[in-house]
Amino acid sequence: MWVLIEYAAWAASAGVLLWLVMDAARVNREFDEDTLLSSKEGVDELLEHGEVPEAQEGTKL
Image 1: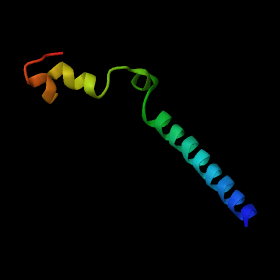
Image 2: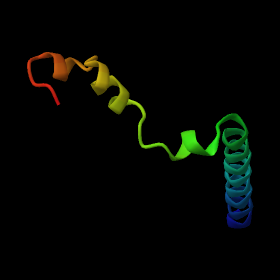
Image 3: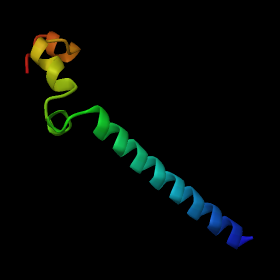
Image 4: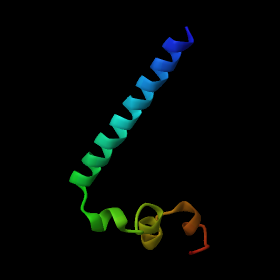
């Protein structure tokens, strides 16, 4: 019984590894290196335009 569980765990691990490699390749194809290494994303862009609710309550960051 434990041998089957061990093989299932190895199969699941291999599946996750395959998924990670495929996702990394997809992201590498879709985005250039400058975008991936940029520190300017998400909340940073919202703060520039004052679109974050906390920033609109009178405390500008």
